[in-house]
Image (cartoon, rainbow, N blue to C red; front, side, top):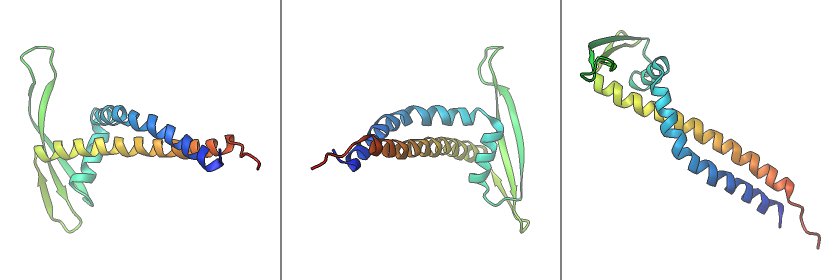
Length: 136
C-alpha cells in the first residue's frame, strides 16, 4: 500500500463517521443556538439587518402558549434597524423567526463541517504516516 492510499483511507473513514454525525450535530447545535437569546439575536441581526448601526427590539403580545398554568409564555417581536445614512427598516416577527432559525442552523452546520474537515486533514496525515511503502 502506498502512502497516498493510507491518506485517502484515513480521510474517508473520518468523512464517513463525521458526515453521518453532522445529521445529529446540525439540528441539535442549531436548536441550542436558538435557545441562547443573545446569540440568536446577534446571528439574526447579522442576517436581517447587515451593516445596521443600531437595532431597536420591541416585544409585544406576551401570553401563555398553553392553558396550563405552568407553561411558558410566547411573544412577538418587531425590530427597527437604523443604518448610517439615517434610513430605517422595520422587520416583522415572521422574518425575524425564519431568518433567525436559518442563521442558527447554518452556523451550527458551518462549525460542525469545519470540525469534520479539520479531522479529515489530521486523519489523512496520520494515515499517510502509518503506511510503510513496500520496497521493490
